[in-house]
Each structure stands twice: as C-alpha cells, then as structure tokens.
Image (tube, rainbow, N blue to C red; front, side, top):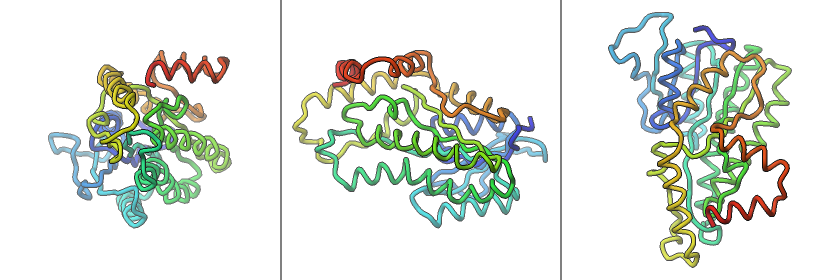
Length: 280
C-alpha cells in the first residue's frame, strides 16, 4: 500500500502496547516503520520475522531514542533521513503515567511526566516539521487519552499532560496546514497494554493522606485490564494514512465517544460528579 503521505513512518514508543501493534500493523500494510525505544539498537530489523526484505515490502527497524534527550531525538531523525531521505508520518506514542494525589506529587515527578508525554512530543515535532515542510506533505499523529478530556482524580499529572497535548495538536494543525502537513490527536480510553503494569506511583503516596486514592487507582487498573484491544488504535492509524484531510481528533471506543458528546452539553458540575463517583 502506498499511502497518501508516503510509507516512511517514525514511531516513538514502539517496543510494547499500542506502539508495538501499530508498528506491526503498518508494516503489514507496506510501511517502512522506524520504531523507537530507549533501549532499541539502530537498524535492528524485527519485521518481517523470516528476515526477508524487498524494496517494496514493509518492515520495522528499531532505533534507539529517548524523547527526553535533544541529541537522541536528533540522532534518530538523522538516521531515518540517511536511510530513507524523507519522513512521511510521525507518530508520537511514547509516554507513561504517574499516579498519586496532587499534594503528594513532587515538582520533579510532575516535570518528569510532562517531559516525556508533552515535551517529548514537542522535541519530535520540532525536528521533523522542517523536513515535512520541505516535502510539502506530512502527517503527525499524537496519541493522547480520554483523560485529556475527562481529568481523572489521582491521575492529575497524566490527565494534564494529555490535555496539553490536545491543545498543542489543535494549534499545530492550524499552523502547518498551508505547508501540506496534517495533525491529528487520537484519544483511546481504557486499553489493555503494559501501560497498566508500568504505572509510576509518586513517592509520597506510599504514606498517603488520601485513603480514597488507592481504591480509585485499583478501579482504574481493573478498567484498563478489561479495556479495549489496542489493535483498534493501530487500525485507526492505518486508515488515517490515506486521508488527505483527517479529523482533528479521534476518540477510540463507543462508550468514550458518547461521553465526549455528552460532555459538550452537560453541566461541568454534573460531569465532575459522575467522574467523582467512578474514581473519587
């Protein structure tokens, strides 16, 4: 498949979960996927599994990249450009979540959350946008979360980072349109991935003054383990590659789509009450 934007994809956070399935799905569609992780080895081909490769065949090459490090970002972008001479699609998927009450989350921990989820995305965009402007075409897909629309108690920093990502993407979309570049944010709800087991807990939450916090996080973990299969996100991304004018935002999951529509018409107090009952 030759997509509208081209077949060279740079995908952060490709070693597990949504990122891994997305890389595999796009490679099956014929994309040349450069998947990144902090421990990846430059040029390691992990797909096709039989080791065969032809000029028109999709593949995944793993590239070492830490989105919190400017030099690492530059090196990864340079590597893809040396290999392909272009970057058609950028997917910002790298991220993690911090749990804990706001009072019990240090500034260092809060910055760490934003440094990966938000500033990591910004570093990637800054390095790739000049390439896409020169090409006069490109697609940037940012993986957000419904938590950016529905802030979740005891997940405040994660929710805030995803809300910032949403505003960033909508502004970016308007800025780059005249250059033939498109930007989309995808907002999954509860999804079955390794994200759940890799959740970070603020240090002060070990002796929390907020007894409801533990029950709230346990409810969240249960919802994630029973959540949607991440292949739905991967398939949504695959379809976007052929859309000349993709939507600004895509919410994954029927329930979350309904909630998003209701939020536009229901009073904020009622929305907060419902979320408080679910997670408070």
